[in-house]
Picture 1 (tube, rainbow, N blue to C red):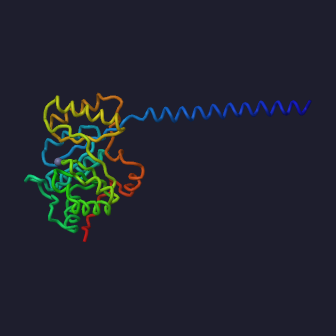
Picture 2: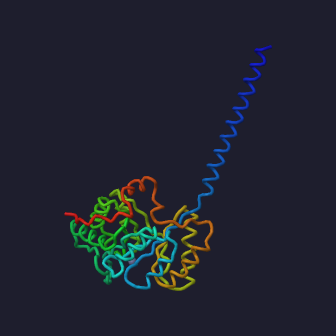
Picture 3: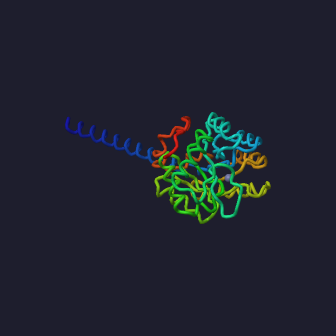
Length: 276
Ligand SMILES: [Zn+2]
């Protein structure tokens, strides 16, 4: 009799535990599934060409998820880099690079004939004028980004300085992203230019394309410029777009890439020592 009572009690306990365990597993599975489904696609927007014009300051009203890419040695480069970092915004160096057709690249450009030490020195000088920069993207560069040697030299310098790279892809023949990854530099590529035609319709259509790509691939990167029209449009487009998480560019890196960048604190000014 006692044995039966004990056996029944153990069976009941086992069933109870089993049921609880099953329920617990179901809850965990549901939470995981819900968590995965609830993860919205991510969009990062980079505001290029910051630093020249006083009107660029309007871009500071954009959400701090918008990353600033600041041109080196420009009248506002240091001031903008400080103010943006104080806002909690990610700052990048927008590094001019040689084009196929002659263009005014502005100061601090990387050119074809530069050797490794000259590229490193030009990079360091540019970084001094954009303090707090945690990554680099190319301004122009339709020629230089196609060339293996200068890109390898640049990416080696970026790897040594724990900086990431975003290929603006000013030419479909750019080798920059592939060479960056080969050099161990966390790297991403621009998907959509948002405002190379300055009309409401064009900016809106490009923004929708950016959103579609994010839904398709889970994340996408748009590049814009601080034209007053672009800034105004982006404010409302970002505010009125549901189902997308707008993030700083650094949020799009894989966990492994983030670990590589972890030693670089955006609030710590970069080293001012030049490479040999
Ligand atoms: Zn640019």
